[in-house]
Structure formats: C-alpha cells, structure tokens
Length: 455
Image 1: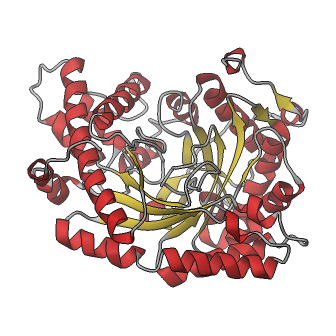
Image 2 (image 1 turned 180 degrees about the horizontal axis):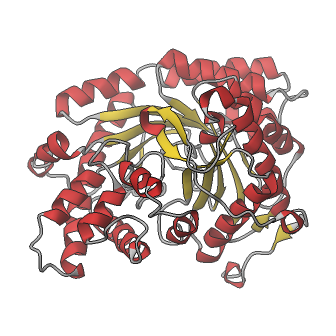
C-alpha cells in the first residue's frame, strides 16, 4: 500500500467545498457464482440473500465516513457476476425474474444502482447469453435500479458482429419500452469492447470472473478541481506546466479516494479492490470535463484541438493517480458523457460538438460514445453500425470503448431528452442518414488484429 498522508488529504477540503470534488461511487463487487441452481426460484432466493447479507451496511457505513471525513460520497452501488452465467444453470430461463430479484435486493439495501445484468459474448453466444440479451429491454423496463452491459468485442477475439447486430435492435426496444421516460432504458444499457471486470461505474459495472468473492471498489471524480487548478496557472504556462498541474491534482484526488475506500472496506470486513481514476462529470455547472478544455484555451468542446486536449488530460490523470495508489483499475481516465456534463450539453446545443467529433475523441478517452441521444426513428442497423465503429476503435487500440446511446422515442434532432439526477439531459444529435444495413447484416466475426498474437 502506498503511504497516505492524512494532513495532505485535508488540503483537499477546499476542493470539496468549492469545486465539486467527491467520491463518485463506492461499489460493492460481489460474486454470485455460488448461487447457481437448476431451479430459477432457488437461484433468485440465493441471490437475494447473498446481496442483502453483504450489502446490509453499505449505505450506512458510507454515510458514516462521509460525516467523519467531510467528503461527499455521491453513489452507493453493487456490481455482480454477469447474470447470464448464473441464470444459465437453470432448467428454464427466466432472466426478467432474476432482474426483478436484483432490483428488489438493491432497493432493500438502499443502493442507487446494481450492475451485472449482462453477458460476455465477444467470441460468440451460448443459449444462456442469447436468452439474457433478448430479455434486456423487458428487464430494464420493469426495474428501477438495474444496469446492463454486454461485451461484444475484444482485442484478442475481434468483434462479434452477430451480437452487434442484435444489440442495435435491443437498444431500440429498450428505449421503446421506456418511451414514457424519454427512453431511459437505453441509458442504462452499454455495449463494450475490452470491458474491465472491476469497473465501479455504471452502467458497465460487473464483477469479473477472475475477481475475488467480494471487494470494495471506488470511483473518484473532480473535473471542477482540475479546471480550477489550470485556470490558476500563469497565463504563459505551457503544456508541460498544464500536464504537471493535472498530475498533482490527480494525485490528491486518488489519495482521497483510497483513504475512503480502504477505511470503508475495513469497516465492512472485506478486501479493498481498486480505485478508478476516471474524471466523471455531472450536470452541475463547474463540474465539467468540457470546462477543462476551455480552461486549456479552447473556445468550446468540439473545437479543433479537443482530441489533443483530451489525450493529454487522460494521460496526466493516469500518471498522477498511479503514483498515489498501487491498486488502480476500472476505466481510469476522463469520461465524456454528453447528457451528464453541463459543458458538453452546451457545446452540443450550440452545434460546436458533433457526433463525428465525439467518435474521434473516444480514441483517446476512457470509454466511448456515452449518453448520447439520437433521433428515435434511427434504424437499428444504423445503431449497430455505430457500435461496430466504436468497437473497432477499442479493438485496434487495445483499450476499452463503449456505446451508451439513446434513440429517443418520438424525438428528432434538436429536441431534448430529460432523465434527471446524474443522468442529466441532452439535445438529440444528428447521425448519418446513410445506410449501414448490408454491412452489419453480414454477421460473423470481424477478426482480431495481428497484434492479438502477442504470446
């Protein structure tokens, strides 16, 4: 464990009070592999009992630590083993029933979200995987706290285009079944390439197969702190100075997160897992990754130079954070979710930020096309084409990429979707009207790149 100086941590109090520094999430990661049974009702009972046993004090302990350290902990969450693996043991599949059990357990222990209703299908689908994927729209429509993710590609396996084609349809259906809430079902569903199994952030959190029985994973935040630090630099500061300042701030943010995470894990009597360094924005004014770009000198997110600014930010955050902790994991970098970032929302509304520019930015950021609303009449094949493009960026660059996109029912470009809370609101953005249909319907698997043969 790296040495954590308590006095140094206390220097961050100003960051907390003025610039929105917080612990974005403490996430209990829990294995459900011992909950398998041929009877789905028994599986449900085992899942409920295990979650409520391990998570019974999660929220109350987080609140205690918030008060003791005066550090806000915004979300308390749970991630579990991909449910396709657990439900597959049943004689008769009923994944919607299992989703309701997960939702009830999450509600009863008081967490914001529970992640893991998903599957890992980068090389192909089993019968259980197919059944779970087909159940996702209904499961998200009938629950409040469930988040779902499907890994459809990796740098080792390539891109499962059969799964990509199917996920375009699933996303459309998830939005349609929650049309009374602007398609919020799709806002809780993400497609991944190279998904990490220790990510504490939703909607992609799950407990990976190689993870321990349980762990406490922490996600930090603080784009407002980074922006304020850059704005305080002398006007003649060059990019070396800017990167150095970001590293210093990332060190402090990470130290704060590890202090909280280790203390909470100790009180829960479970192992501390990882700290995710990702700068996660919120719809609050001043808590924006797009605001960091403006502090660097760009007029708005989307201006030429935005991708370079994001690349430097992502790298500096990782360099600073890794010096503060030996247990960095998850995604770790900078998020660019349109609906969850006030500066991104403003840039999109003004036409400064286009869909294509967002895709370019994903080549250097932590995740991908995140929380983007598109017209509700967008064909599912077009959505599959968007997913395929993003998976290719992750596969070739050996990094995690993702797509969380909302085809807003009944909305067209220029309209707005409103989800509230951390999910925020977003203008509906245009996508290409050109057809991807014949391409995505070829199916099969796009082979992994040559660098996958690196053993």
